[in-house]
Image (cartoon, rainbow, N blue to C red):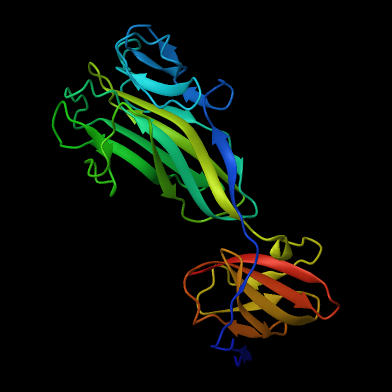
Amino acid sequence: MKRSLLFIVAGMFIVTLSVAQTQIWQESFETADGFTTNPASFTDGSGDYFTRTDLSNVGGQILITGIDGSFFFGAMDTDGELPNQAQGLTVSFPAVDITGYTDLSFKGLFAEDADGINFDWDANSRVIVQYSIDGGVLQDLISFEATVDATNQSASEDTDFDGTGDGVVLTDVLTEFSKTISGTGTSIILTVTIDNLDAGDEDIAFDNFRLEGTSIPASIAPNKQNVVKIVPNPINSEFVIETDKEVAGVSIFNAVGQLVKDVPAVKGQYVSTADLSNGIYILQVKFVDGSIATQKVMKK
């Protein structure tokens, strides 16, 4: 079947729109109502715990500094108080609305009380933060493992998720780590999983979790009054605009709100995207009657 193709002009001009990096969500553990745990939080008051704490309820042998506020979440020797609780302890957070945001990132503070030169983690010790967007599969965000696959090792970031720490070593000072989140959508869920901090002084502390993103400028925010369908989405090398209205043109913005393409278009005709890099784009469809509709798409 012969198709009518409308190719986007190769030359481009850039118009920078006002964008802002915004804090979307924060959990500082100052209260106990912003997260859930499995199993239920516990502490024996002397070094076996899995709980939100200000250090007053976990025993005097723990030293953690750099706390944001008064409280953080910590875990240590997790099977000492509850048998068979070495693996799969989780701290989960309610879904966060990320509608209208791109360039998502995660920031959080992490520490481990290493007792000076007495390192504690074993080869199977792990703490990992994962995320899910719009109910999708959990994706790895940041992980900490023993630096060497042996007993009594320092804990460090596992930058390639291969089971061995190879990055920044955790100390007893809560230190910020920042990670880019791939993709966007309408909601995101974060989960922390703690495995095998079950021997002696193996511990973890984390605090002040935040999600940040770039807000889509109001001028290209979705207009639900004018519904369009972009086929296919994700886009490969071309797409077609499906709508009942007469289309005057289409503008394509990148994820940070820059206008990268602006060409005439007619509904039902194919638009080439072969010269666009992979990533998230916002299509602003302009109609002959002066109204506008927008659609978020992904180029793969």
